[in-house]
Length: 430
Image 1 (cartoon, rainbow, N blue to C red):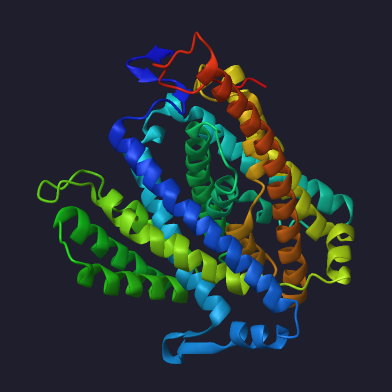
Image 2 (cartoon, rainbow, N blue to C red; image 1 turned 120 degrees about the vertical axis):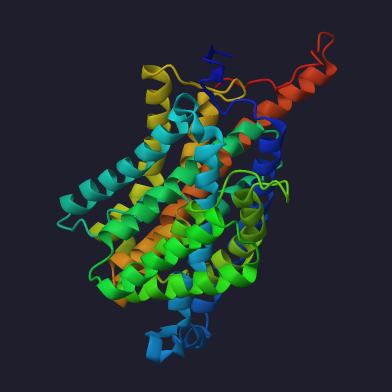
């Protein structure tokens, strides 16, 4: 494995034991959450395409809250602006950890997943634009196919009886962290129409207090932070900035240095506590009230014949695969960075197709980009179609890779010259 200044240029390299435990914990939670997410999405589609459709719309559109504070929101709105803030809080915490003590702290090691993630956002947007404008459409939905749904993608991996290298999952997780940061930047910059300056200043002051209590005074106790987090979220929502930005901002403020008394890193401990709530509750509930679109023949016809929905579907299915794989190839071809020894380019291509599952964040951005309910239905159907196509093709490719790795393992187990002391599985070059 090439080395420079004591650090590996390969990604993913062999992680230290504590970091392997953190990654494994994240993968286990996200995998279970992905399965719950699959069930929630299926329930939404069944609920919205049966005679119970009217009850689905009634529940989804039911309003409750505190009108005096501007928080009289629908159930769908609460799940999108409220519960997804938890999802982005965890994403912000994971990004902070990766940047400070994780794989992304070393620019050389981070080159491959970062370039893959950036290319995997740019190319889908370009594919959308080319498809939509060539058919007299607009650029309105350019950001919809940019995001990868990590929970959904890991859920697909979970259903495969896998001999695939664990480095593939670590690669996907790291790529998705960068992807989530890109999504929140897009939401903050391009989907904020009007700003209420006093409430925005209030949210910034709240974030400053959060930082002071957590990082300077080292205050412990959820009873300090939960009310403060709710206040920051409410002020951010009232300011006109999408409220999920508050979640990622607080996640990025979590302290990475170990507490001497507790013996753990607060960013890891808090993310560990919040991740099950995010993956097992927040994201599935959002999916339940966002994925319930009509799958009638007319809707599907509109997706494949209309400019913007077709751009979204192709952006996810083709754009993400081209972007992630192309970015990975360019990074290892034109820089000194390398893939880890456990991975082959064929593995990365299968994974790149899998990143076309853009479910959660794509649905959220679709709602922001298309306020009109009829247009939203078509965009959501396009997200579902593109994500489903990506999942199906990726499953076939990953199963082929899995079968090849299984045959190698079986051959190794029975061969006379088996290298039983190898630290890494055999590489199934494709």
